[in-house]
Length: 552
Image (cartoon, rainbow, N blue to C red; front, side, top):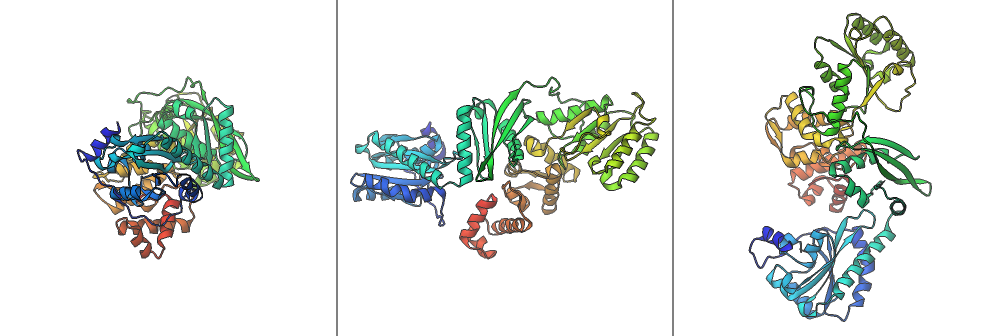
């Protein structure tokens, strides 16, 4: 398999060369651990004809220690030296690159190497994973002449990787250690899927990966992040894109009185009989974009309530499309007029006056942002809806409210009049619908000649979208101002879309992020030139790029 990958990448080239990669000065968690661990390990093999090599996650050699002069000279001839990249795509099958590809320790002996010049060596590589996140940070490799190969090479490399992990755990922050400890304890005590979330840490056990596919895992992580800041235990039910209903039981983790994060245990529920994914048909409003199961279920619920004239509360975060969904559902009801009144714009007195007029004319009624009304106005609206217009179907009007926040009181006399409630999911819970939404929103803007390149579309699917569809629309409006037709590439997207950080930025941080993105675009990704242009040191711009999650 490794040779097949190598041939696909390198063809029939029997002497591929490692590329030299210019690296800026870094101080990664792996390098910090290596400075305290590797000298002792190198001393253990000081008199042996073997070299101890450390690489980063791209296969770039960070350090090379020990080994006699003859071996070091031979390694120099094949560029197995600091700064050179030994990925499988660069030099074919080898102990470093192949260990990174398969994610486990392995020994590559002599003729097992793809490259002819490397067949005089034997290499044992062991991936170094982060003790908390599980991410592969690099490889510890032991290389010797092929005739000196033995199984102890692999054992030593695996031991070195384990010591690096232990050292990294010692250097972890208190909150990270607290989360890691709570996560391990939860995994030992529970036979259920478990997810842990902290400020910089997200972990899921093997049961989570086995029982849920990638879209469901993404939805679980998003819902976990939504409740991750809670300081008290909480349990919620959530619908996954596959149609599965799960119960998420969250328990916070503290260290020294400070919230470190939380542990979530996941239990599958028996799907509600009402959760049936309707087929795309004429009953689905044509103006509503999106085909994911979760979104289709939401649309179907609103459409059916409208058809049956069941009074409905439509709740959800700002910008998720509550108003658009009500309008689209009502379009499927013939010979009925819908009056849309916004409590946030009209104010309570004017809304009550207009609502009375519309009900008197036989119109159906959608009241937006009902939560913005005072208790007195809510009570008055309840009285109005209980008046002579509250007749039995088909004469009785259909009434829908949009309501947010969801933790508002539901004991008012008004809300008790609405037997049904539908929660419109935030965009981050149905990211699969982004391509359809993008096409629909661009058409609405008149940008029929504009399409997104796959890289740009994929980048949009990586974002948190705290402003939901409204935020996506603003991004596309900004993009349309930049480019009127053709294919939108990644570098045409607004600066905010080039950053994948999920934390909320201050105004100054957002301006700093945008300045870095614009400078990188202006200088074709040259970080040094970009740093100079905005008066920032090279070390600072590298740190900021990581901090903001800027995609080059």
